[in-house]
Structure formats: structure tokens, C-alpha cells
Length: 108
Image (cartoon, rainbow, N blue to C red; front, side, top):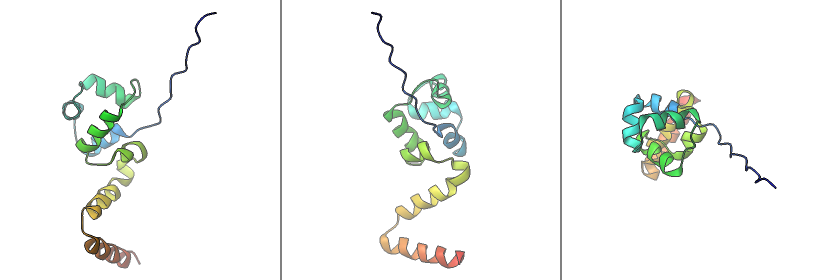
């Protein structure tokens, strides 16, 4: 009996290219930051080659976002909100509460 071929796992959509472009990085610069070649980054961005956890983690550092942001959010739609959340999370509890009160008042 011939061997049974395993189906290739389908990776979900990523926003790696969008985050790179949002941070105004060329593929060459981003590839250097990620420790991979530019052609390999292009293949990963196009879904031709699967990404790995180390690549996602390096990209998150290079693109100044969380790994989950790379998988879930288009930065051209929510990038400023992601950046604002990161800024808030870097503050003390009191500073964060004050900023949230100010934002709520401004949006009311």
C-alpha cells in the first residue's frame, strides 16, 4: 500500500507585511532584524513558507508590537490603538487610571 500523504497544515492569515510597512521598514532591514534572508521574509509574508515562533517573536520586537498583534490586527486599521495600549501598559496603575478617565471624558 502506498504511503498516505499528510495534508499540509494551513496557517492562518498574518499581518507581518502590514506591521513591517506600518513601521516603515524595508524587507531588507526587517530581514536583518529578524536574522533571516530578504527572500525568506518575502516567502513568509506571502504564506509560501510557514512562520515559526522565533520569527514571530523577533518580528514582534522589531515591529514594536505583541506576537498576537501580528496574527490578529491590521495595523493600518488599529495600529494607533495598539500603540496607545502599549503606552498605557508601560505606566503605573495610577497613571493608567488617570489616562483612562481622561480618555473617557474626552469621548463622552
